[in-house]
View 1 (cartoon, chains in turn yellow, cyan):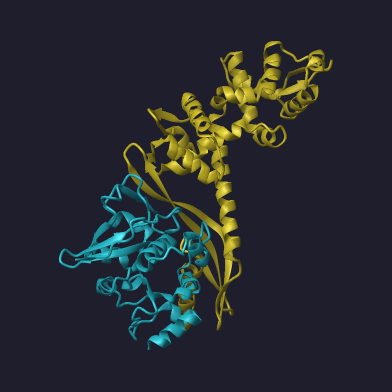
View 2 (view 1 turned 180 degrees about the vertical axis):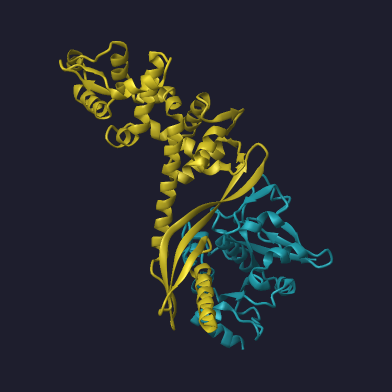
Length: 304
Length: 214
């Protein structure tokens, strides 16, 4: 029995060494189990990817580890020729990248849940979603969008696409004479937002569309403005917040991190104007040329 | 005190997990005055993959790249490793590369750096040793992680006291992390017969070198 334990301990030691020697040092072996009767170990792989960030106000530097647990289950087999892992390093790296992407998208969703009613105050987003806004204002203030008006609309085909989206999302519905009126969602929102005026309900309805229809707006209606802002906000909470800190970062650090993380290009002036918009609605905070996060959003992400 | 200065144009790591290749590039540039080895070439040879970093054994692959210039890589991974082992290399104008755990970075770094670690991380950080001051018990190292707020013209190296150095250099069961260095075959290559380099075990060409040395 003792001998068996010794052999198991020895195999495990060899596999651990193999991971740091052959696979990479960002990899952590977890819950290893020896398959009985075989020289095989099955284990979970966790990843701990280091990241360096700066607080541009205090000039302090932070090293944090972005951790991804249970990236995959792997099998290590041992024989006279050595140790083999049943997946390649390239495949493992792809899995980590997917996991990173999923983590970021989760943060984006959590952020959007918290800021959707504020983000629509950004004028560029309003302009980008103008056709939707036009339909909503007609329905909220004129009580209906008549068939007659739809027929006179210059780009009727495009408008029909928005109407279909809003109908499917229960924001509007067709009445018995073919006009469009308020659907279930605004009515429910109205009752949930007691004492709020019509404009407030319209604002929340608009926010609801942005939140619930995010994927559709991007993929089918090709409206990317919400995505652009959301990615910029996400970078802050993904990269620049660390346990007890909301780091203060300047434009260039922020931009650099955005480019690196999303592997994309953006004009610097445009990026700074987006940051300024986000500070104006309070999703980010500004201190001279430095930006930092909002404690409530950080908490909401942390709790989730 | 012995310090062997690195070349003025230092290579800092462009990615957090490129410390290995950046250290190697600095050493090859300074020790062999060779510009032939780009960071890209070194990374390729090390099988660097973003997210995973580099497996320590892949350092042996560098022999394929360097053999043309009769340069060989050595790793000394032994319990007998100590500062004296490093000093001997420095005295021969050879840059030793040492490995510390990244989670211990703030233990030796004398600047405003804080590490958020949950203690479970394996990530290593590679440093080039450039000098030893035995009188004041100080090790001088080049750290390839660039601090954007530091003036490297005034202060290119970090100073670590001997006691701190040992404190972060030790890993499991009192064994020290390996020392890595490069030597040209013509440079009076003199390998301690007791010294087992990892390349001996894995690389055919290095076995040949060892035989020649004997």
